[in-house]
Image (cartoon, rainbow, N blue to C red; front, side):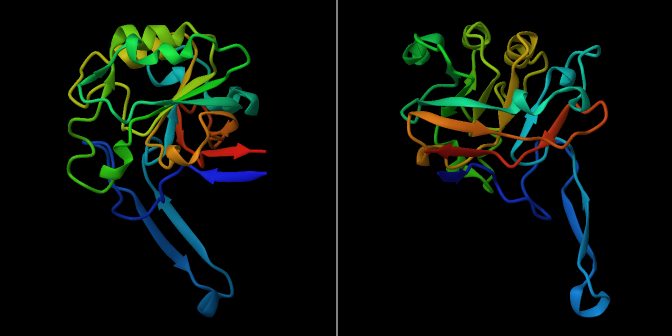
Length: 211
């Protein structure tokens, strides 16, 4: 088995979604001084590589404490969108998904993760059109992942792509990286969140596993 890390490193001062509080990791105990090491983490539940659940936008949806591990693991496929040069991904860009039998996760590879830690990362990334999001939502998947900050543009007030995906019960995994190291299909995708009481989102250590 080969495991491919699809997650950005969490560290103090890392990029965060515009308006979110900065992440801070503070070492409180040191092996040489205290005999053990310990760190306090302060960050949003939507920091770095993370997932959104339906509870992110729907008040009556179950929290992460009510969702089992099977919701976050399954067979994945990659849609290569690295040649895209327009603001929105449309259903015509997803025609390779005509057969999704046995498929759990679709990972959208745009190559945008090369802009991580630059001012451009949260600026003009390719987002999902509402129609494309509804198309993905109707495929019977567990979730959709992307190497961009969001399925909607940063300036969106109505979040139509989020709503379309979450309304179908999908999870949304944002800020993935290294998707290009995965095969186009035939791998297991795993994005386990923390089991937060009433949690609507969580950082994840996303990986792809090939056999």
